[in-house]
Image (cartoon, rainbow, N blue to C red; front, side, top):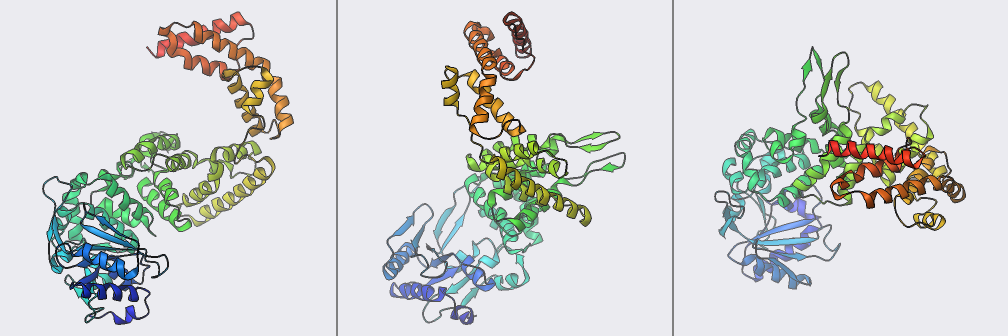
Length: 534
């Protein structure tokens, strides 16, 4: 079947023709395969092209020939994968950035191995090893057959009907590379396709095999799934295929509805999937979508039934936030500001709900701005996405409330500039004014100043802030001196009480003014700390 009409006005045609001509000069048969053919038929944007050449070593040979023809700088050879790539000049052939070349091959996994056995094969062999029939389509690039579609496994039919089926028995396809089970979920989310029941059954039987796949490969697929237009479609495939407990056990733990005395709670798993899709409708930001997935993870651990009150999830925001680093480490996600961002949004995602009422103080708004910082707009996006009630009037009421919160945030930020809070008096200035070095006294004054600004007691400007610091300086010096005295006099066996002593000296308003009374008070703090931490 020729695809001449589709290729006639495509920016890919000149590139594909030149690859085909280069292959002919080398005496090779070459085919564009996989995603490029699928997306050409679906009218999707194409950013990379996979080309299969027939014959051992022919992939690298063809890549070098194409490099010369296009004037590209070099061929990138990946010997471990038997592939070679040519990077194209930006914008020369539409959105295509790379062309990857590989010789047709057969490959399989043995036992618990993560590395396939690879040998040279025919076009039929290469298409049969593909994950799904819609990715097992090949476009002949030979000058005399250019644009002819090779469809050995009815991929065209499945593409038209929106099905993901495997070219061979799904048990064999998934056994050869268990990552294909996750790819099924990813493609379902990207294309809005259904996964064939026989494939889902094989996934359930072989879900444990995902454990042999490197987490780095899984990470890539999960990110692509979460970046899709409807991530929930892919997550439901992971669930139906039995993979969710292996990959995202925290999300799996949210499934189900408990009931006591006829009182149930909403299905937090279904709610979370809806929040993810709502977020995807509002933002392309990948990490905001991951925050949506994580936002209620703490509910499984905090779920309690209180007679007369119903189901509660007190503290689930904090519990969920503390779960984020462990999830990121397990999935090999970056442990940097992206993890901090997700953790922050999970911790704060209920805070804006408390600001909806008209009577909310500026102090509460300042604190949210301070805690959310530059991510406050994303936090509000997540809060809006978190509205999944079936009652449209209730949703509309909350959305209007969040609009008012936005107005409050803008107004308070314009006056007080706390979104990116910079103390109006620096630590260095405090040390110079008090004649002390860095230590507890300086930390006390910086914390008290921050709280005073956020509470609106002191304006966020230098002179008033400096006067406030001076007014608290004597007490801070006294507390700092007491801590230094205790730190040097405590025996080694009691040093584990230093944290409790520091906390008491930093913030306890009941610390006696008299030195002897203060020391006795601190002795009691020490004794309690040692008793609870033997």
